[in-house]
Image 1 (tube, rainbow, N blue to C red):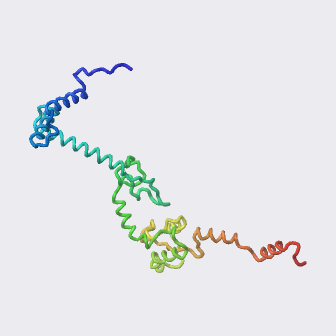
Image 2 (cartoon, rainbow, N blue to C red):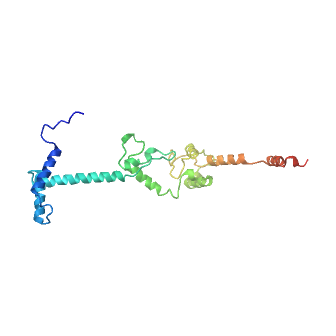
Image 3 (cartoon, helix red, strand yellow):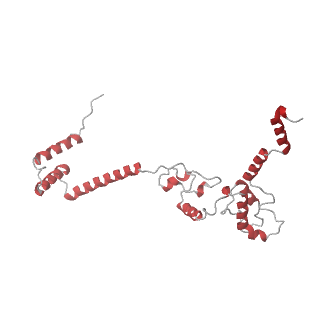
Length: 242
């Protein structure tokens, strides 16, 4: 490797520090271990004069404050890095609009995606969600309901209006779509608004998809009487009565 080039402006910083240290030791020789206030004050004055040159007391104080502030910031950054919470990837519930959910990284001030982030960077979104969460313990969403609970919610939410409509009124397609895909709930609002002219009620014989699937599975597991007799006959084998 080629030899390091010496600075053209004079001795290196390391060499200057070493020289300053030697000057301080020479001027304060035998005084560092003295406990007297005058001796200690003299040692401190020598250290400041040699370290900061001919700078005024105010300048020296300013330099020391800047050093302390820099050290404190460095310590704070290190602590924040050590105890920084580990954030899991943000999950989205089925059918939810990402822009209706506050970005957890934005909330912590660490999101780098900006406008390209699929989640909301509007803090008001979280406040709206908090208001809605007041009802979540009592009024959960449709994916946790059975057929009876769904019918009960529909009766409470739309019963009064449905009673004011003729029995022959067509059922709202938006309502049926929301029920079919599992988006219906206490906070579902019809795109037609409060003045929708259609009924919001389940058609006769309607069965939830998940209940329909269970019924089909149970039907497959059901054994007819003829199948049971045939199974018993086979179990008897050669000892069966002719």
